[in-house]
Amino acid sequence: MARDMLETNDRVPHACLICAPGGELALRKAKELAAAAVCSGTGRKPCGLCRDCRKAAADVHPDVITVARAQDDKGRRKQNITVDQIRALAADAVVLPNEAQRKVYILDEAETMNSAAQNAALKLLEEPPKNVVFLLCTTRPMLLLPTVRSRCALVKLGGTEGEAETDEAGELASGFLKALNTRDEAQVLRWCVQNEGIDPQTMAAFLEALRGRLTDMLCLRQKSGRLTRRDMLELCRLCDRCAGYLKVNTNVKQLFGLLAVDALPDGNRGNAID
Image (cartoon, rainbow, N blue to C red):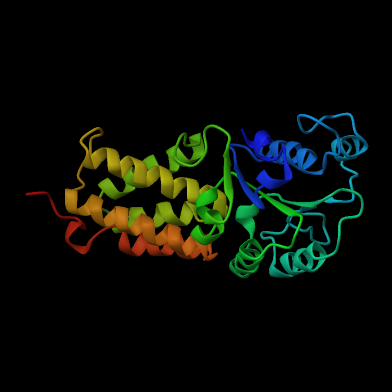
């Protein structure tokens, strides 16, 4: 269906949000759509035969540009796509295409854009230059601003955001709930400290998995242990707060600090259920 959207000029969306359970799958789909966008052949696109398709397939097309997290001096990927990278993209986007009828920008791991970068990207998406297509690849769309997501046509490849949790996220959610059920403030704090080194993507998955388990408990699909209904509702709200902070790039360690302080209500510390 996404390919059909790019078949003719009048149906080309100026931006697509490509959501997939894995980064490689999202990037592969983005390259396919990019080839369709620059294809100069006739009929179904990408034709795979024209000069533009062949260059796109070889990752050498001058009008298909990939933006990803930069590397530091040791060759390691930095944590975020920065606002300077998006500003450079914006400056380049107003320049006419080199060979094709349009230019395509692929944002790999779009969810790693920091807050300033997302706001800069939003301006581009709201007022896109003529003949430019933006393809945002993500495995965690919830980390993108709702306004960014709303400006993009959705290309969803099965199993993303809420359809299937990772094993690690599930284990974290289970471990956290187990710690909470002890009603031991020190044990909850210890658990948070032990896990505060996870990356933002895993943190987002953990919050999503935790909220899913709490929903199951509230609907009596899963045992709640020593947690009361009020406890679970407060925890759901806490998950939402943390997810909101994560969207503006709050440090994961700070979020675990918030969980350690607020996840266990004062009235539940060491007290038995009536």
